[in-house]
Image (cartoon, rainbow, N blue to C red; front, side, top):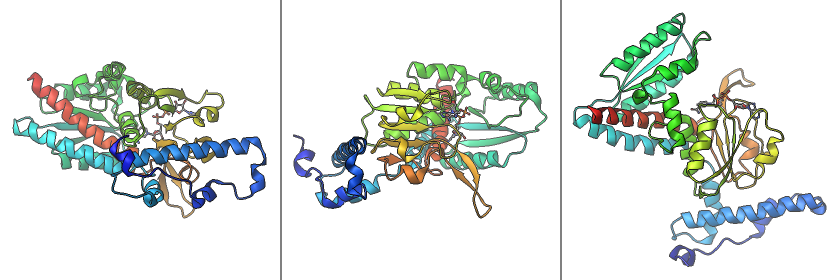
Amino acid sequence: MTQVDRQIPKPHLSSHWLKEFLPPQPQQLDTLAHFCIFLARLRCEQSRSNQLHLQESPAGGSDKTDKRSLAHKIIDGRQVARQILAQTRERAGRLIETGHQPKIASVSIGENSGVEIYVRNQQRAATSTGIDFEHIKLSASIGEDGLLEEISRLNAAASVTGIIIQRPVADDISIKKVQATIDPRKDIEGMNPASIGNIVYNDIDLGPCTAIAAVDLLKSTPLEMKGLEVVMIGHSEIVGKPVAFLLMAEGATVTVCHHMTHNLVAHTRRADAVVVAVGKVGLLTGDMIKPGAAIIDVGINRIKKDDGKTAIVGDVDYDSCAPIAGWITPVPGGVGPVTVAALMRNAVVAADRLAARG
Ligand code: NAD
């Protein structure tokens, strides 16, 4: 028995706790199906509670258990991002001391208010970590050849150590061609085919930022990654596929679902963790998840509220999932800030590697 096991009493089933999980009408327990769900919730809550006990300092008594589970439910992306940025700032500082200034060149095509917000966030994060940031705004009519020329210029510029292409690009531009043109050594978004290929070999130093952010957030929970049953909803090159590879590298058992998956709920209900990257409001609801599961919401959807204002929401129906999930990321404040932090970390890794090569 470990010291933690000895000092912390194991969680017990208080009458308050039981009331929370029993259906309101006792007669609702009359079907076998309902009773099975009840038992599953019971087991799940106990195992989650045990994990939280082991994670906490031994100072707390058993009466703190309920407060702790509530306090740990929301995965705070801003907090995780702050930690990554602090480490990145230190590493950038060491690089700058040796005369190597990291510099990001960000390229956007045409006018887009959403892109402007991303650029502002990236610029702020870069400045806070000591990375130079130049934003190059190209005309919407630049065309593919014009954009590829601009990328070649940035590839050759000695002062530029990282390149970002802001999405969306115009319809007449192939994003695949653009990504393949970026020098893999400056590919801080991790979208060049070489960078994507590297993650198959567990080389994630310049991995795709959003996928890395989703995995970092899942890893910030006390869940053991080895053997974890994860369902990834969405199989895009930018998120779904890389998340699957990154999690396999961690030892998780990953099922990838997409728009052609039959019976999505059959997969999500047995998952210890669900990562959602689809772009559909309310795709994942509380009745689709296993009690105690970790939910990572990558989706970014702009909706119009009743008062006419716009709001950003994810793919997860937060209100129905939060009471059932063990851990959940909010939108905004979840994957988004960690993606920006991962981008800055990649920028410093790229600058470091370029400096080492001379
Ligand atoms: P995409 O359009 O390339 O892929 C969507 C995926 O969802 C596809 O794999 C498709 O098969 C799947 N899908 C569609 N309908 C489905 C359904 N009914 N059931 C199951 N799967 C379904 O999208 P993407 O580029 O991967 O982005 C997904 C979401 O993540 C978007 O909302 C996007 O804005 C967001 N995103 C967020 C960040 C971030 O930093 N937080 C970064 C990139 C993308």
